[in-house]
Image (cartoon, rainbow, N blue to C red):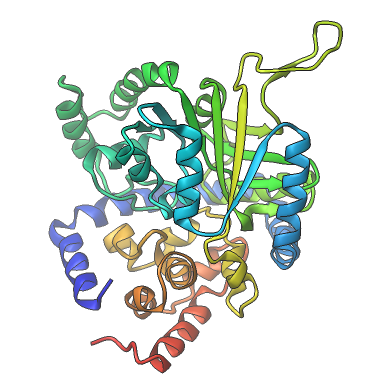
Length: 398
């Protein structure tokens, strides 16, 4: 992405002030909710420090832990793969899905990273995002604007207009009515689906357990109703022990604006039963086949660099609500990942120094993100160092 193209996008985003209005509403709610959550669960601050230590160990042992997780999963009848690149991950998942299938998909930032939905659609599959915000973005043929709230830039009035047009019936600009309309539309897709695809918030190597945090219930349906379930997970999500994974999960959901989430899913094998003569049979009420694809795509190289701290990110999205620029333009300050942390991920995972340059030079280095971050990631400091690398590579802004 050139600086010229980036500036054009920002100018478009600023028109009318609607994005700033929508993000402003979300920011107010987030600050109120996180303050209440930390007051109710004050141990979270100390737990976050412990999770930082867990992530430091996990990133230093990333390749080893992925191999340990794979061995345990295979013993648990989950077939595993390692994809070194985005294209390899798409090819693996496409081979598991086939063509002409109905696919339901839970929200997964890693799948956005590799343009998975678009790849599967080109093969003739019907692919439906089932997270409410992701579905709205899909219907707009747009892009997510926040790590956890993809449609944070849309007001309820805009959502009403979009759904009314798509569903062919009037959907009033009331949040409950809009949610009900989407639920009715997606229910039939869940039942018809041949494949469910989800991400993971964290994976425990010792047990091969996939941990998923959610509120809507769509991830649970994606991972339990279709006969085939595929999980795509970045290699940085693997931690040593199940107790570590649960600690990571709690800090993630607390800073992700969930005092307590509606659902925490733990998946360690395909569905199974041992009720007849204690003989274990796979494929009871849930999927008969479960697959897990671990994605590298630059993560291993990043883990060995001075910027490895970027891999500690829990994807809670709290930093974005505190970012002054994000408050004005939302996800237009970003590429696949957003804000200052997105500049780092663009540089080392999804793009390169040239693509990251506009984002790195947009960071104000104000430090608000670091104060909010449960991992205390020094995003401002790393963005300044990234600028130095860009300048030395003769990629200065023009």
